Image (cartoon, rainbow, N blue to C red; front, side, top):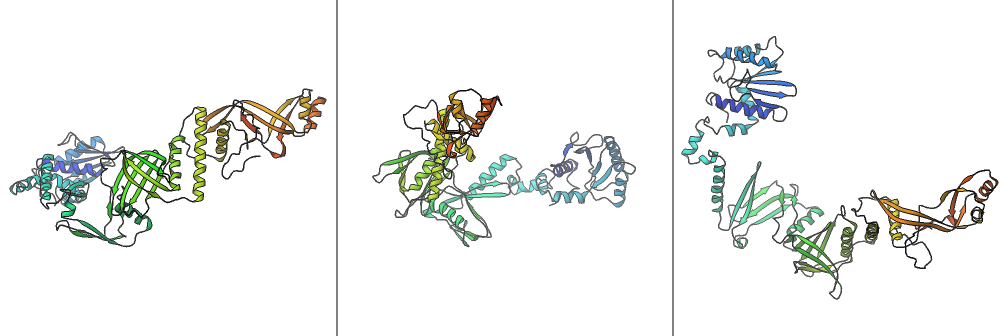
Length: 561
């Protein structure tokens, strides 16, 4: 429906054009109506785009420019507009100009550095066709050609919201009452989101599905394994997750039930989402693992995230620090329960991450389990063993890393989340640090030689050190630390030693120092047989045992000799 430009009047014409110009430049320029309606200084609407000014001049001449004073009025407005040095001047009129009238308007710009444009009836209709909501909304005014009066006569004036949003609420409630009368067992709640109307089927009483069942039947092609599993979780066990069946899978969706709801859809996507959380969500949950005699071997506390039931069994989802545990328990007691576990260690402390990982390893062992919600039994079952030998070895190494970091952090009184990644060098250093803290002696893979500067002192110790025969060496450092994820962890004083050390080119260095050829010499001291220096913390208690290096026990890394 196009505007009847010769009937809407000048004020309504101004409103339509202003709304249209705002829409045309809403994302690219600043639009200003000058001094409201009526204009000022030959300008009705300014469009400022960067450093350029475009002026719109509105003239409500529905029957052309032939009337008395109309051309002089346009010329006067144009002249005033030129005082503002516009890039473009646009005359907007609700009529179709004759060739002569168009020539008059275009001639105004002759000799001036300005672009002159005419937006007449045809141009207005064309632009408004792309923004039809402007026409629909602005048609509902006193210049609507009698539409409001017609609505009142038909007792439907609320349909066009003559009373504003108050009418909207009343109309929606009235429509809701109409929908409620469709069926004694079911009704439909509805909402609008943009161009979508969302209809939600709602039972009027708890037995509606028994008295008047409504079913959905989906016919389609085969689904891939991942989609099939998602459908089973959602429909079979009531798992709290959204599932989407794409068009290439769904051939038809048939809704069966009362006549007013029954229909068949084709070429459609089927999407279902979880309903709102149950009132018991966030309740305290305990997941316990039982021994053969029924005693609790391990238990983990969390909060209830979701609980559901489907055609095959029930489901429980539990929130744990850094993890989500999902239990699928079939109604068929002969079928094994399934337990899925997703975890993310990012941002957790070592102690928190250890709980998450220990639970993961516990699940792999299988066995009996039970789930308690607020102290009441919510489910139980038996898990099969899972996880390959590689999985178990990988989890064991990850657990060792977390334990190492937790011990060293506690010793150094520093707390920070576990790092997202770590080089092998840092991992070796952390493992050594944990063993040192626990009073062990370690062979350092980073220490195969020791370089010192030696000044000549003619004594037995110096001559023996440079004799070329293996000697015992012990050096104490006041501070020893490692850096992990930007954090310096100071372990304390450390002793570096080896019982068989030789100096490179010792006899020649001895002769040079003794003869005075050099005042001092740089000496490289190496443990015998290509071994590494040993280390221990000096404040570790002496247990009287030999200082034999403790194996590092890192998967894929040979222990240093």
